[in-house]
Amino acid sequence: MSESGYIKFSIDLEDARDGVTGGMKYQEAVTRNTTRYLEWLEKTGSKCTFFVTGTVAERYPFLVRDIFVSGHEIACHTARHVPLDGYTPDEFRADLNRNLSLLAGAGVTDIKGFRAPSYSMTSHTSWAYRILEEAGIEYSSSVLPGKNPLGGWPGFGNSPCLVNGRVLEIPLTTVNAGIFYLPVGGGIYFRVLPFIVSKYFIMNRIKKGEAVIAYFHPYDIDTQQERFMHGGIANSRFYNKLMYMNRNLVITRLEEIINGGGKITTYARLAAELRERNGLRICKTY
Image 1 (tube, rainbow, N blue to C red):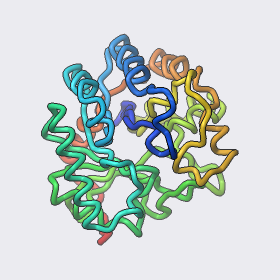
Image 2: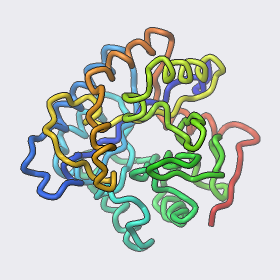
Image 3: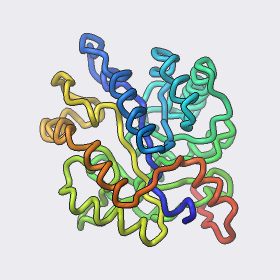
């Protein structure tokens, strides 16, 4: 089976407290939850990609080193976890360089990948690809290719593409739910959607030899987290309620998919395979 027939499992390694006013008054949970993911990945013999914020790299350099030494891929998730439309190009360039610098300080270099926070790579922020290219980033997985309540880029297309022939964009795996496109392998959606639906779409793609682009966060498995209004959801009580749903089921659901034949590997391995193919889609955005 080629890399395309695997789950590209990733952890967006961020601290949920950073998006909350006065967030540091709440208990620290990043290390505890990340350790749980690492133990599960070791048990399943899997390697995955951790998209790490600069804040986490600065606060927990030992944790980033442990992830890297364990053989997992480390990639960028911005320094401050601000959506791209919150930066000017110069501000984003400085933020990305700081993200890379803090990861280097934790002992990780040769960073190949990037993910923008909150599906914020859109037609309005596609100028960021030029800056990624300048920094030597080879691939991004930042696009939700369709309309979504929290963002998205309708019309981008579901398949990977070389943006202006340079940076490879690997869009999230989505399902068409009528009005919206939902990332079936994404944290809150994986938790809230009926598992029979998520499992069907995930396993169907794998059987067809197509990659499943999946992402989770430390808080997605945190059943001990205190209640607070999460950032990035426009202070919606409804979305905040969903943020806490079914966290106790994530690992069990993932194990069922793995036991059913799902295999996990890194984004970098898929990106390398895609670049070797003939006929990879090229899209122009800036």
